[in-house]
Image (tube, rainbow, N blue to C red; front, side, top):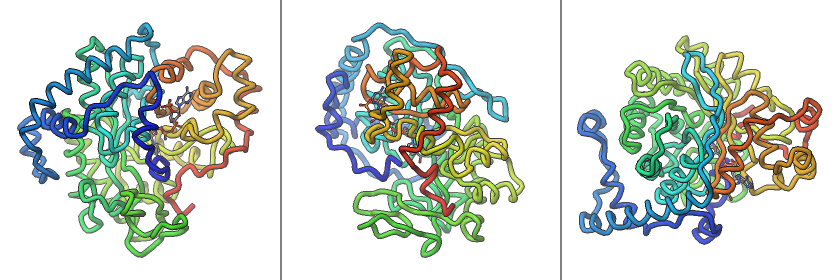
Length: 414
Ligand SMILES: NC(=O)c1ccc[n+]([C@@H]2O[C@H](COP(=O)([O-])OP(=O)(O)OC[C@H]3O[C@@H](n4cnc5c(N)ncnc54)[C@H](OP(=O)(O)O)[C@@H]3O)[C@@H](O)[C@H]2O)c1
């Protein structure tokens, strides 16, 4: 999970020469003010904003915003624009989800200015949409990146998806949904996402994780972590936690959250609704609740886990009529998957990189994916996975690969 990784240092995040430069954080905060929601949404939201921002920063913010947009444009124009059409997959309600989206939950997590640069560059490179979350705390930056791309001439149909936290799963007061208030807290989080993203509705809203029931069903905290709801407050991380989704209390909380998403869907605030990191027991809990079936379950899926149905979660998700959306298809990029000899060797047969082989494997399984990059070169390479195919033999080899074992969701008692 992105949250289990230490935050990348600012120096590392800015290291590559094809990455867009960042404005100062004060400018970022002030720029956030420009993206306040329209009054109608503001009235509905009724949430206290976390802080009031100093108006003195507005002038410097405008300058920084202009400079940032110019720099991002330069960065993204280093190579010719050659967007490939990304195929779509149909959800059970007929809404069509692009197979490949940009994720903003890695190095641009908690960094709105980096997210703005990343999203702007990715859309111009050809990504059809963006995955974010209220917990990523970069949604205002995502909105700025979209606006900058449009200003630079990007006119595609944007897919915008976001998430609300599992009830009780966070210590962050800005996004925390209290376990005593799962329904209202979830609905308010949906509205807050819209406000931060500057839109009237999104394409997809996911429950980010199963809930956390204080003092129960938490196992295996990582060494040095306190465990329990909220994970590591010092690092503001929501992991690790494992929820026993079959237990009565978490199941009740999940159903409350799901009712709130159903209400948001009925109100037209989101074109589809789904879950993330939900294991079979969580899905069964929702199904027994008698409501809508989730349209999507987003969880970790990459080559080497091993197999094409780790922990049976692909099968379980599909049995409930939901589309599997893979996250971390490159195993977070920093491990050895991209240096894996098998992937590299297969890649050579097609003139492709190990990363492209890893992405292609997921797509060829018929699963949409969310991957992340801050490098324009990598973005373009990652998009070059839709008009060629791995042979059946290579698919079998990759599916059998067991060199990178991983949990499809580290948030459930499986
Ligand atoms: N629902 C959840 O709980 C959850 C959990 C985790 C992730 N997600 C979502 O899934 C997204 C993807 O996950 P992720 O970013 O952690 O992992 P990932 O997509 O598996 O890997 C991203 C890493 O791979 C590198 N990379 C990308 N393309 C490359 C290429 N062509 N060659 C070499 N390196 C390449 C990137 O570095 P460069 O910047 O150098 O290219 C980046 O560090 C997240 O951003 C988030 O939106 C959701």
